[in-house]
Amino acid sequence: MAQAGSIHIPHSNARPNPPAVRRRRLDQPAVIKPPPIQRRLIPRKFQKLFLSSDATTLFLLAAQVDDVPTVQRLVGKGVNIDFCPGNGGTALMAAARAGSHNVLQWLLNNGADKELTTLDGMNALHFACANGKQHAAQVLLTSAANVMARTTDLLQTPLHLAVASGDLGTVRLLVEHGASINAVDSHGWTALTSAINKRDLPIAAYLLERGTHILTDDLHQAAGIGDLDLVVLLLDHGADVSAIVTQQQPGFTALHVASRDGNVQVAKVLLDRGADPTATTGSGHTPLHFACFAGSTDLVRLLLGRGVEIEAKANDGATALHIAARHPTSTALIPLLLHRGADVSALTNRRQTALHELLSNPRNDIATLVSPVLEHGVDVNANMHGQVTALHLAAKNSDEAAVKLLLSRGADVNSQSDEGRTPLHYAIGGEESTRLERVQSLLEHGADVAAKDNLGKTAMDYAEELGDLGVRDAIESTNRRQHVSP
Image (tube, rainbow, N blue to C red; front, side, top):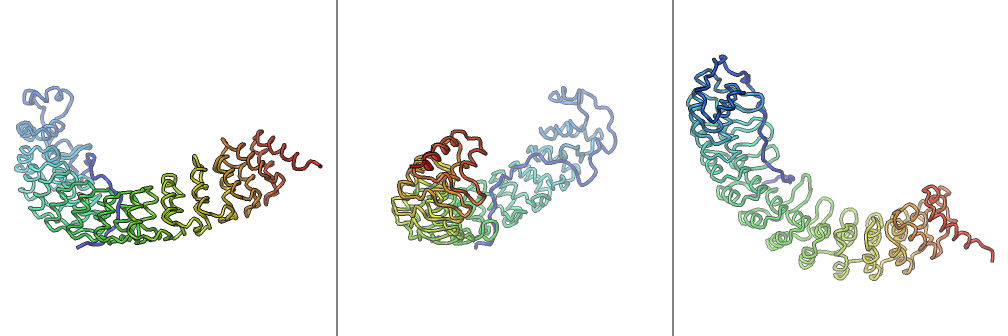
């Protein structure tokens, strides 16, 4: 049965070697200062290191390479069995991390403290599990290591870390020794959530077979990463296809997540299993809105074929057509949406049409994008918020071709915004590389060079402020023609 949870951005559970700041003062070289070590007692593989290292360094290295005789000799010479330097863990931790089970067993038999931790709460069992060392974990568990010990930073259990390492054998071992499969870490993740994040189907399947709970987030996670096999696995084990989250992404269903990321096959499975294609998020967005944002033609076709409302509006008043026009990667969807009956005259809360959305930002080949919207009858002189028309926006953001196209469709060359600015004013302050061409197109179609904005400035005033001599000369030439006596 699904439980409530929250969406989290997938992150890696891989850990750097943790700091060895200890909860107990174990950072002295030895309880009793060891006597000088005879070089002949050191194995040949450590002979070179012996020339520049102390006994404790050799002790930790020997633990890592599973060298029991060297560990035994050094402890016999007085090295603290629980010694912890300032830049690493104890020998027991080093052996667990490396899977040195012979040294591990010897240390445990001789009193090494298996529950000592680093500052972030990592003990020897945590290290063994984080590195997928099943045999080392077995040795520690046989010695009654705490299978539910938690780290202090992320509150992770050994099971969380074993899942992150991807070692199914260690996961099985921990569960068989009583590890809780439903324990959650500081992010609210269970071992299953971690397995999904790692895209580890075998571990996820094992945990589900053992009866782990499915959190609301789990299906969202699988949908978000586009893992079809995991999505099917979760649904087959009872995941709620209609479950929503209330934090971070309020109102999101798994279908919203799949649509946002353009995962067509995942979306199809969710729809086939009963997902609601008309469900809205807290911001009023439907799966179709997200599919348009993702720019996925196949997904848009899929959703339209499932009876979605093409004119559904988000909280800002945007329809699917507005969203497609708004995002450069989605404009290829415009002809499809128009063909399916999208209303070209629909307005957002700021009174924007799809034409306004298209022209709100600089784009290449804008005239090609604008043409189908114009052909479907959009009002070329519609005013958006601030009494701004499409021609104002084109004069600022687009190129000569788009300006001429709008003018050829009857755009008012001298319309004024709430600030009193005409398209010619907008052209002066817009994209520099094509400024002169846009200005000339407006002038050729009767732009009033004497028009003043609410600050009392003409387009010439702004051109002079910018120091654009080409634009200034073009305006002066037009000004002479407009005011010459007959």
